[in-house]
Length: 422
Image 1 (tube, rainbow, N blue to C red):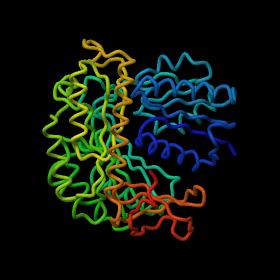
Image 2: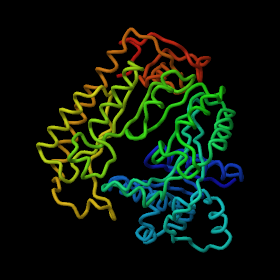
Image 3: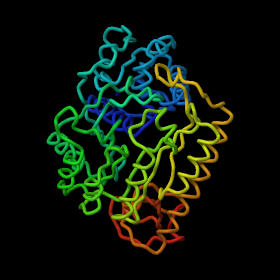
Image 4: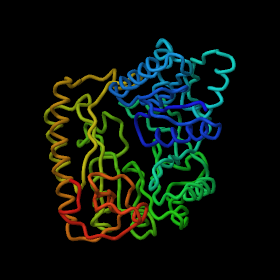
């Protein structure tokens, strides 16, 4: 039996696609093994969001080549899409696939094994690229489900529209059908993922609100989370629906990216800080215990000391639960490269530390505000020092003594200082 090892970098979207690729190999008599060990085929599913992500991609490629020089080494995904030429110079790489073709990976590997002819070129993303749905497996409790791909926003700092192409998705009927398939695997929670999830249906004449209403009717799925949705796309009707829905949880991930309108305009974001506040106030008015996470990019061009101070004060004032902090990284082909006002790397790092400290305070405050309240938890199978872990509906990580009968079940608990994992 031939073996395959896969290493995934980047977002939840990549993890869902990696699972889809692996399932194709398993269906054709491959055995999945650990990426750190010996394999016949190595797959690196790449990310290009930051220069650090790209460095990790190169490290993983060299690891595969050095571990088994005779293995088939395939590099796929976002870094492949935008920089196939650079990857092709790495000795030992046999196959490079961009995002439009990586769902064909098994076929390409078999072709290489028959012909020995490397495939090292990638076609640019087009406006009519097909949507390839995918979902993750391997976690008994949760699945990441790709419902949308691509982005039409072209923010000045972001390379993803070049790596992922235009916004596209399946129809609602096709998406709901796949939700039934995921539920049949036994998972109880589905996380909806995409590059710009709120743009679902742009190419089909449907919309995200219509989708979640239909998904809520799939009774085999007990819980849904939305991995990320833009502030300008999460409407009041979406918020009101989630507040009273059967399965959608009070957990929101809403990118902020900058805490001042000046920097938001330089980024070409499609909202203001005022709109952001309105969205959060609306959520908290109908779901007071809701968890709200925010992405923030620190050190973008034009972020002066004054603008950063303004951003910190703004973020401190928000009813958010925690931050995902990203240090700005220059990306090839983006408009930001031609902009002035660059922030020194050392300053970016110091500002990142400041925002991480704010995030830590926000998270602890959010957890403590939930002490003494009841929430439902989906228990997971991992065991840590005799305890099993789970996340409440509003995304607080809690623990309880391991009980195998509770794995992949939902239980209502009283959140307390004793059971919260800070």
